[in-house]
Image (cartoon, rainbow, N blue to C red):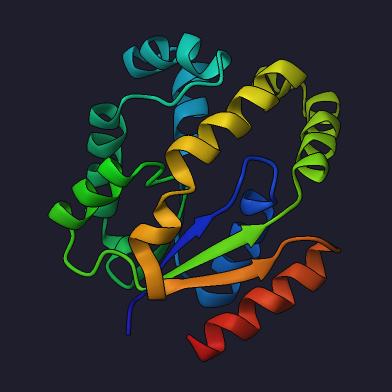
Length: 185
């Protein structure tokens, strides 16, 4: 059975870290729109040039661009047996577009719940360690506001498919909670 997982949570909740662990354990590809967009910016592609200023301001890239990018990625052969989506969908409109593209696109939604102050601390540390320009404090706060207004409504959209996981604690503790929840989902 194909495992089709959506990983949700505020920026800095640990989605990328947990996604790698989940994908390695379940042997499904990690499809991260954030990574795909950052790669496009770094390589200077047309897409990268279009989204660079949007990302630097902490805004969401247009649904049309992201949906097209994800549609192309989900058609790859490695996604036939399942996948983990990280960073998409970020809005109800994107979730509806995903449903139009792929029948039963999402089986389980893993929601990492992390306190706002912890998110800001984590992202500030990441900014200094990795030099990410999208992790400046003002951008972090803007991204949290965008998450609350645009992405958090996906919890209601997906309803019973949502597995709420306490995202506080060590990487291993959070991973154990996720895998326990997925085993019962």
